[in-house]
Amino acid sequence: MEKNPEYETIIIGAGPAGLFTGSNIVKGRTLILEKKELPGRKLMISGSGQCNFTHDGNINEFYRHYGDNYAFLKPALKAFTNRDAIAWFEKRGVETITDKNGKVFPRSLKAAEILNTLLKNCRERQTEIKTGLQVTDISSAEDHFTVKTGFRTFTCNNLVLATGGLSYPSTGSTGDGFAFAAKAGHTLVEPRPALSPVFVRDYQFAPLAGVSLDNAAIRLFRENREIRNHRGDTGFTHTGLSGPGILDFSRHFKNGDTLKINLCKLDEAAFEKQFTGLANANGKLPVISFFKNTCMPRSLVRAIFDMSGIPSDKPLAEISKKSRKTLTELCCSHPFIIDKVAGFNTAMATCGGVSLQEVDPLTMKSGLVKNLFFAGEVLDIDGDTGGYNIQAAFSTAWMAAQAINRKG
Image 1 (cartoon, rainbow, N blue to C red):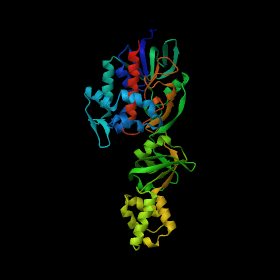
Image 2 (cartoon, rainbow, N blue to C red; image 1 turned 90 degrees about the vertical axis):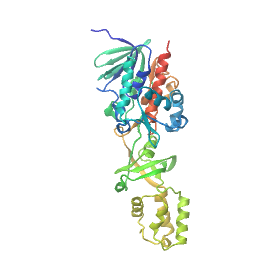
Image 3 (cartoon, one colour; image 1 turned 120 degrees about the vertical axis):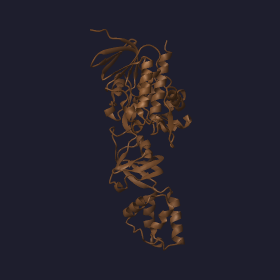
Image 4 (cartoon, rainbow, N blue to C red; image 1 turned 45 degrees about the horizontal axis):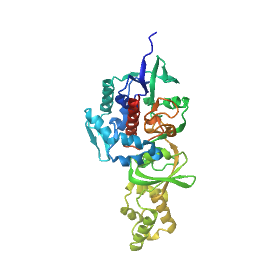
């Protein structure tokens, strides 16, 4: 039987984090193991296949795009910024473009260009990539790791878990890294879908599918108490709500929560004041004329009148205080009860993962197991839409690679 080769570093997972780690390790032999037949499956579908790999904003603005765990990422984002990511790829021949929202893409708008650049750089670093190998077990003894696959067993000095989370399991993200980390003694924060649309109970807006609201104010209620608020573009689907405002906020949602969304960009006091002002000035006008002063789409206004039971041609002067209150609540604080947050097959990211309390943010090294490192979504970090998750994968991978390069 052929003797197992010794590697300085083995990386499990050939997604953005794993490939970027392998692209930047310069010390010793490096091996990347990927269970799918092709590397970078999830990278290839990112940004609808166009690969929005980072954001053009000020790095100091990045931190607010990672939920409650942003502090952990600060050292990594400062050490390898969005500007560094853009420069890294441009140095290797990838021209980039930035859209009006600040999302950065390869000029070709092809994720394959980003993937091929990473693969080429791995080859230049003589980083080996073996695909179609499912890791079945990991063990450590003294200063070495033993990594078992269905094909053969490998050994290494350093081990990097870059296995991703649970979102889009068809790409290979099935939680393997969570199991390996737990076996090694690490605490797991319960994984949940993130960047997820939601299904709404007793949903009445299906006919408005495709209609969206710009920068809508969204308040999250649990057990009749407001616990968080957010703003963002919000869209109606056939079954519920989506759009960046919902996706970015979804890391905090639970089934049964209520979202109260401002559909008209007027708070309740302003709505009431403008409504009564118009009624007093010209009470003969039909009530629907009031909505010419709002930003609400006509189809949404019609839906609101259908729900309220108030005739849209009724004169403003004849609208009772109770009816006015009904319209105010439906427009300014419309309740949507979350029946279900979409699952991992639909979610773009995973919230939860390896507890950050047990990982060094300066090196991505385990605080429990010597020479064990983590990179990317296997950690309890998740970003908003717009390139923040891939940037986090690159930045954490950079930290792990540099820590390995510095080892004596």
